[in-house]
Image (cartoon, rainbow, N blue to C red):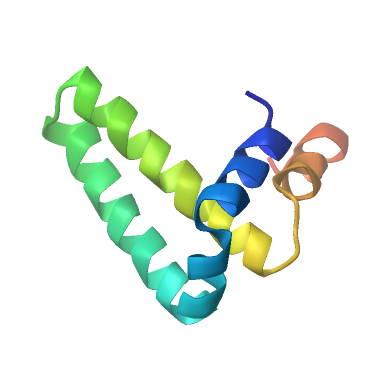
Length: 84
């Protein structure tokens, strides 16, 4: 699945609800999911880690959609001028 596919999927599944929730609440959910990912990476099983990576990516895509930014655009600098 391409990054643009992830964003399109999240928009189809949750776009309306995500826009109603708004950016501040979406950021809060993303932060919560990052915490769950950190815990899964430290102490979880591979299945739990896969689950949490998916949740983080989904919330990140939702936030990007709300900000009218593509994940491809956001990752572009890593292709042309990666931070060292």
